[in-house]
Image (cartoon, rainbow, N blue to C red; front, side, top):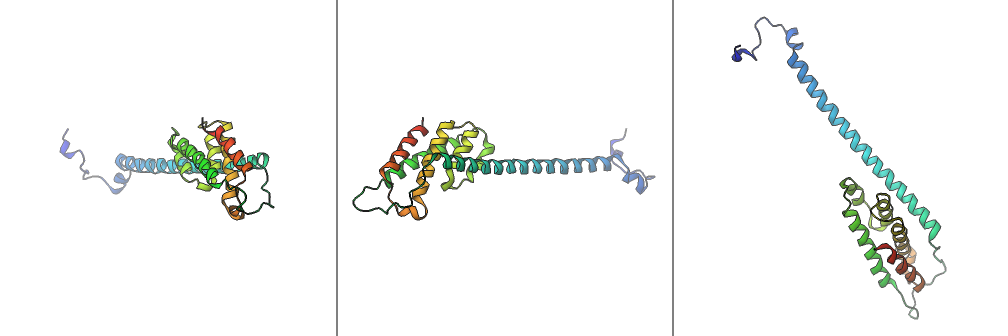
Length: 185
């Protein structure tokens, strides 16, 4: 066999012979196979993103259920901090920051890196959703999740909105401190 003529086009070949040749069919097959695999990977990525978004929504609903069932309603008649009563805001913030650091460290140590994208999009003021997701993925226990949500939601009431001017009473600080002891092992 003469290898120099192996890729040469025969002189008797017509355009129709070239269109129906095995080489053209193989090239078209390879192209469509590549496109199909790329589209299937994109569809799989879109499904994973949709699943992550659904888990965030489910976690937010779970947080709302926990908050509604277990946390006391903020007393709307509470007074702004006066000079006669002690404000536990700095102590409570220190404890809340420790709980947030604990949740972030557990999120970063998740062995399944696919969830890092979901964890990275959590806003700082909604880390209670992160706690629920970590519990769903067995990174923290259910009791740790409940305690973390309690700490974060109690603090959120005193860190944002009109309640941010209120002092953190000793009773609320006691609840934050007690719940935080259940969070970290």
